[in-house]
Length: 327
Image (cartoon, rainbow, N blue to C red; front, top):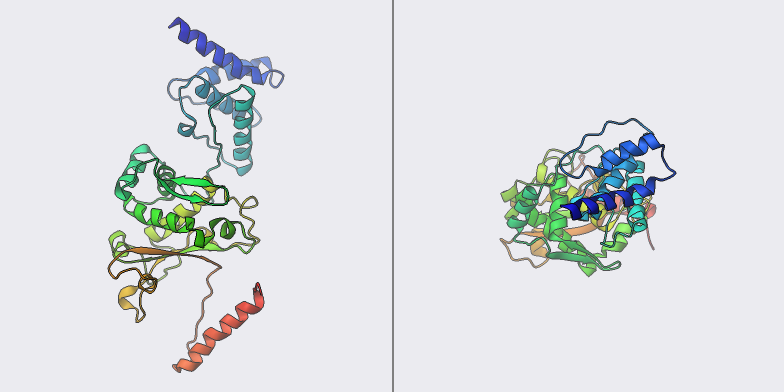
């Protein structure tokens, strides 16, 4: 017990040494109470400019030094993007200054006008069980920077996006497809052209999880369509750093970067399902992932003549080649 008290005091003194010359003595006393609290929850009420962000950073660092938590068990939340990056950079810099030797990965979880579901261990475990994966299983690797995507991290982002456990096999299949060399994950994510991953789901899984394949298919109203695509976007941001203005160099982007996931209406279509066109046996579930631009709605309501309808589609293609071409 004596040894533990000395260890706690040493860790606290090391962490608080970072505040010397930064804050007044009265503030240092308050910070000592905040940083030194390592057991149970703590509510801190503070106004702007009071040093609360730095206190949170120091408390996290103290928990790491005392081995009260692993880096992956700590989530620091704030309200603005600027504050999130500041918190991330402060923690990384403070860890280096005190010689914290374990690997600390500082990432920013983002949301824009959308809620998130708390990624509890129970929810993540349910997703992994449905997908038949262990937490450490590697789903795929982004080849340019050699960034692995583990099943555990994929499950966390699926839960954050609002996916139910039954959606997890589809999320995994999409991530695996995107890590295929033919997809060119890094190039399509970093391009100024602003493409988004367009996901088409075929087979029995569509009906099993209740995906939409008909009315309003590219818009609101269906949970699996919305959250599967969103899980992929969150994984890109949180696991691969595909952040606008950084890795993501898109000039304009388009709304498909929120979610761009549909099921094919196989039962009512006269054409061969996309999965079967790509040599997937009939009756099996599959996903196809394409890097695409924004949707373009093509309509012809004034004729039943096949050639005139076809000309409408051809005109749209010609227009697209005039406004965007790499040739």
